[in-house]
Length: 145
Image 1 (cartoon, rainbow, N blue to C red):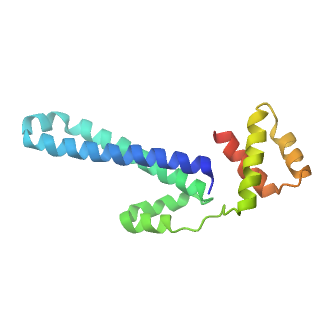
Image 2 (image 1 turned 90 degrees about the vertical axis):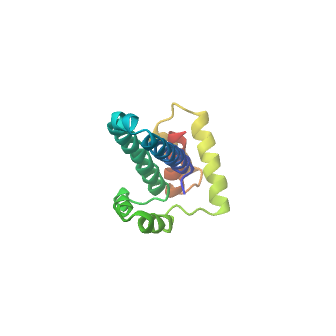
Image 3 (image 1 turned 135 degrees about the horizontal axis):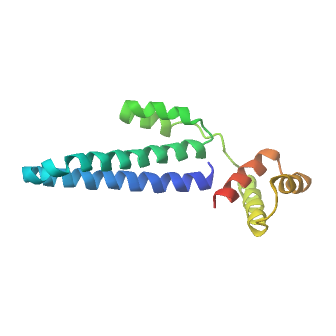
């Protein structure tokens, strides 16, 4: 799983879910006072849509972190069943302990040379004996952070 996408996924999901909970609680509170609820009904709907989009973005980053296509988001229409299916998808970016160490080396080298071009960095990584796949993953992680 790509670290950078995984971190973004978690951030968006936490903000979206927390926002949905808060807005739902406020909606229930305003139902006690009907006149106030009528006035903010449209605003609440727009806020819920916004937090819903944040949750969807969280799932989008989660799928990207697993190396999956964003088309899997269609499963979210099936609510809990869709979420379970998305969560159980196999990770296409499975790395061994050696790969993780090499990945971290590549990311640190890329971060220490911010002006290096993609082509030059790839040439140096391949020359140093790192695989093309590992370089691509490290490049994406270094680019995201």
